[in-house]
Length: 115
Image (tube, rainbow, N blue to C red; front, side, top):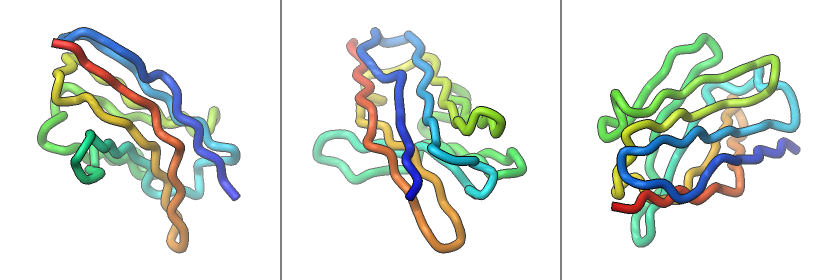
């Protein structure tokens, strides 16, 4: 069983920045891709960003140019740097890791952006 633990969420004013971290309980080399999703109240969970084992990234249109996903394989950690935050970015952010057979989720971390 793999544990994914997110951290770094919190309350920030619009225009501010946060960096989310997702620490895995084992090597992340076997996960392809890893990513971040978010779910706002009353809305479906949506993709924010993904990163492959080779470092290729993919972003939702709503966060392109503002968010950056990265992974540190040596630390078994994936990051999401969020800049120029907007109130509409308010949501619970979930870390995701996939293998060919299984999908893992973290417990989520709350991000709240005040206007």
